[in-house]
Image 1: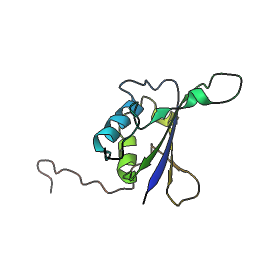
Image 2: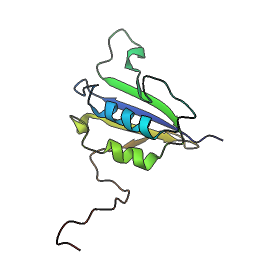
Image 3: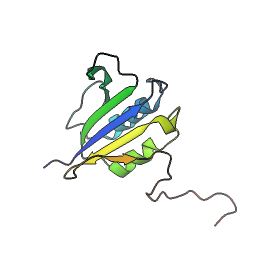
Image 4: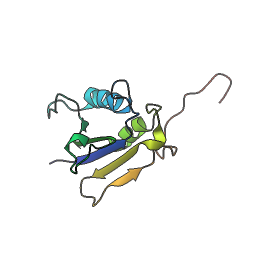
Length: 124
């Protein structure tokens, strides 16, 4: 039985591939994915914009992946982190198994997932 999640990330050319958001997300995915299923050596999120049709070069970055048993809420938390040069220019689309259509995740909104905050000195 599979539980597949499709991910699409669209961002501007100003998002550097090295040390940038997708590079960071791929590192986290590599560290947390179940390696028994395997994945492409280039990384879970691959740049697919070069395969766009038309008679001009695609003027952005387009990444896609299809991942089995992804912890979607955790992935969204990672994507909402301070990893993007221009977060307002990044579009994250996720389609979960047995759901029709992609859901757009606004990376500028606070997370709806509860995150336990660490206590700081003097506060209770």
